[in-house]
Amino acid sequence: MRMVLFRRLLGDVLRAQRVERGMTLREVSAQARVSLGYISEIERGQKEASSELLASLCGALDVPLSSVLRSVSDAVALEEALSAATPIVPRPAAASAAAGRSRDDVVASAA
Image (cartoon, rainbow, N blue to C red; front, side, top):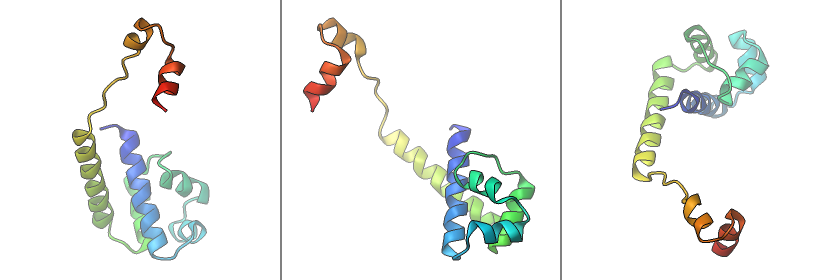
């Protein structure tokens, strides 16, 4: 599990909580006393959120931290199940080159 995935899922959950409560980023920013830009980056999964920051955001959203973490945990479990069910198979680039076709030809013939 990559950390980027966790950050993205945490941001998704926080955004969903904010939208569910009908709050704007500006309102959460003012109540949590955190910059609007930083909250936006957290919601997009671009920045890490410390435990103190999470507590402040949860307070502003009036949602228990345990509820947010439970939702993130459920989302991680779903992602794990999906990735286990559909393994990623690498594209056989060597086989198409051996057949005398370029990568573009292979893509074009599949369309």
